[in-house]
Length: 202
Image (cartoon, rainbow, N blue to C red):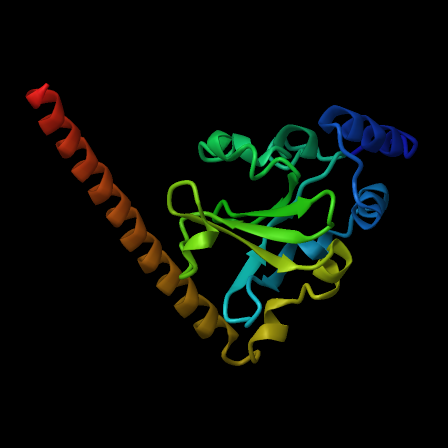
């Protein structure tokens, strides 16, 4: 962590200059404040119906000692999972948080909306698909609301049944992810076979 409190405002200003964007006031204020470690073990709803619950692993920080949670190193979503081809679509977004499975929470710097880049998870709405086997969709209207509605696992599930329900859901997600990955492998294999046939014919 930075020892000099004055270094944090300078780091925020330097970060805004680096990315060429002005951060929304609520998120800028969050970066300037002392970090609340309790937020790292929180959950959030990842869609409007509240059916999908995701565990928040880390917020990216400008005062982080870890290269993996350093905002200055990891803010650009186009550097994730070969998403450079989506640069135009993701131009106004920065990565602000993550979960243990590699999914990312993104902030739209102009509107202030919070979006979720779900790794190895395809929702039913195909318009939300992005990259290989990922989905990208809005989860909250603002950063303030995102923080307000973070909750502990115990607030989502009854304490007596939380462990069983949580691990059942994690197992379901793991099985579905494996199915999605296998479908991707099969599609790639079919494309490679089709290309091989075309190469022979030319």
